[in-house]
Each structure stands twice: as structure tokens, then as C-alpha cells.
Image 1 (cartoon, rainbow, N blue to C red):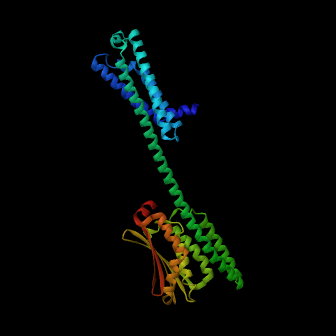
Image 2: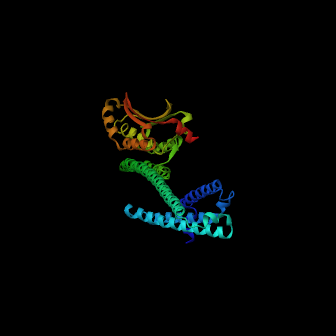
Length: 368
């Protein structure tokens, strides 16, 4: 009961009722002064009990609106109309009785217009009170509808944000099995070839990589230097598989090392570069990760160069465009940046390059 009372005191219905009824009785005060019926402020003070009664009845109409919420319109609005009529009659009767009492006890100068029975005057008062009751009920209903619309809009925005986070997390987590399959396959291959120490070293590096990558929130934006550290941990694992055949180069502009990028956005690109580079030939493989500012964008690239890549670039291009890694990367970029981000793949003489672009200014401002 107490909580309900506090809720009513802080409700929109109470605030609207207080505003409408106070304004109404200010008009009554001004009218009485113009007609010479009372001194300044006298009529308003006399009507304070009626003001409070009107506010209480209007709040009651608001509570009735709450109680009838969800009912069909043909049930709700006739009930509100009837309740408003009853409230108007009560307010009119209270007005006539109270002002008659005041004129007979405290303000004898009002007896000329307050004591005589005047049906026309009472009817006009009833019309004004009905108008005030129905106006207040309409304002309360409109405010509730507006509040509900804003609440639904906020709820829809929250659901959309949650869905985007869930989608980003699902896309991010979809990469781990792909990577784990390749790594575990590599460990199994080392074991079969009796390269036990290398297999143990690869298992240790895998544990370090998983510890660092899985502890991070997949939906976060992280500084580019942190993303490069994750890639370095990944490449440490692959170096065990490919040995001296694998070389890595990092060409990142110093001012972009704090650039915020989607967590784990480059690892699938590096994985594809190794998959379609070292796995296709027996020659040495160089993986180059780059980042540069260009035309208001940050352009991140992963390039693989290896002997024999040129003659196989067409086949690699077809496989790469259909790969799960690039497909997920495109979806994650769209989830974070919409149409403002892009991803392109193209063969190069002796290698293959994948580039993605993200807006530069917002990312750098957030990083700062």
C-alpha cells in the first residue's frame, strides 16, 4: 500500500492533474477579480479544497485507465466517460456546497451570487468541470502512450544491441573450431612423425594462445597493438608447424597502434594466408601484416608471398572468397560499422592480399 502511494505521488497523472487544475483555478481567480466578486488571491485560496478534490479525482481517473489497460476500446472509453461524468457531478456539488458555506460564514459579500439557486450557473460549472476532467484524462492517456512508446523503443534498441553482441560473439566463436582443427591436426602430424618435443612446444603455445584469446570479450574493440600481440601468439604456433619456411613482417604506422579494431578481426585473415600459402607450396612463406591511414580510413592488410603462388592465385581466390574466415570477417565488420567498412581480396604476383577498411576518425577518438 505504501509503495503504491509513493508511486502515485511520483506519477505522471499527479503532475498533469496538478498543472491542469491549478491553471483552471487561476482562471477562476482572474475571472472573479474582473467581475469584482473577490479581492486578489481571495477566490483562489477559497478554492484550494476544490483544487485538491479535482486533482484527486483526476488521479483516480488515471488509475482507472491503468486498471482498464488492455481492455477493448468499447469497454474502456465508455467506462472512462461515465467515471468522468460522476467526477464532474461530484466536483460541481462540492463547488456549490463549499462556496455557499463560505458565503454564509466567512465571506458575506459572496451571498448575492453564491446562495441563490441558479441552475444555469450550476450547468455551466458542470460543463467546465467535465471539460477539465476529460482533458486531464486525455492528457494522462496521451502521456502514458508516449511513455510506453519510448519504453518500447528503448527495449527494441536494447534487444537490437543484444542481438548484435550475440551475433558478433557467435561469429567470433565460430573461428575457434576452425583454428583449433588446424592446430590439433598439426600437433597430431608432429606426433606421428615422432617430433615429440616440437609437439609439446606447440601444445604449450596453444595453451598460451587460448588463455589470452578466450579471456577477452569477443564483442569488444581492442587497440591494434593488442590484436597484433594475439596474431604473434598465433604465428608462434604456426612456426612450430612450418619452421624456417614461415617468416612474418609487421608494417604498422606508429600512430595507428592505438587504433580500436574488433577483437580477433585479423587472425582469420592470417590463418587464410597460411592456409593458402604454405599449404599450397613447399617454398618459403612470408606473412606481412600492415596498417596505414588512407583517405580518412584505416586500411589493414594481410599479404602472403610464397613461391608458386602466382600460378595458383586464381584457385586460391576462389577458395578464399568462399572461406568461413572471410565470410565471418565481413559479417563482423558489418555488425560494427555497417556500410562504412569494407573487405577486398585480390591476387598479386607471387602472392595474395586481403585488405579491410574501417573509419579512421571515430576509432582514433575512442582510443584517445
